[in-house]
Image (tube, rainbow, N blue to C red; front, side, top):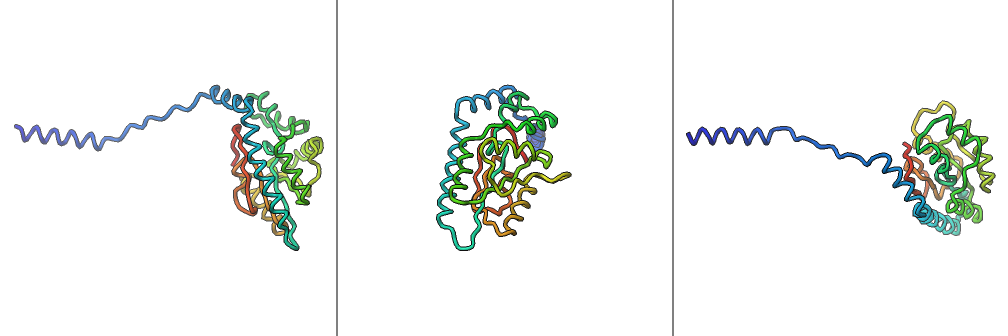
Length: 221
């Protein structure tokens, strides 16, 4: 009888061991709570401080690298636009952090985004040290007029090229930007710094150094 009980206990234990584990998914932060946390981060001034830390690192690197210019080098800096040199925060607040293509296109067309001051200083440092500026943006080619107007209004109208996403492009932003930098390098430019708020702005190489700005608002592949 004891042997029979032992066998039954053994089988019961085996069943417990072999039973599939019940995975309890962690409940994500409530969306309203997350939005409030982002706004607290921005309104506290910490967002601007964190941007300034990375921007200062980029400025210092550009100045130091330009001082070591070698014969024949054509030095360049690549800057993203949205949440890099221009802030779309007023539009994002108005949309409650939602995205409607028509409303976004109208916002870009108006050309009223403010400069992110810390990163505009990176732009100014590049010009001061005679490093050529290229803007590579995920904005569409149809967004060019509003973007050109906005950059000029924010005193960032001196640059070599504004490279926008081609009409009909369906690939990732990261791939498109990598190809754009590769082309610039093939044309003889030495990209010494690539500054952006997304990993997709920076991935893929073709830059001596990359500088990732904080962006608590959205992610782009």
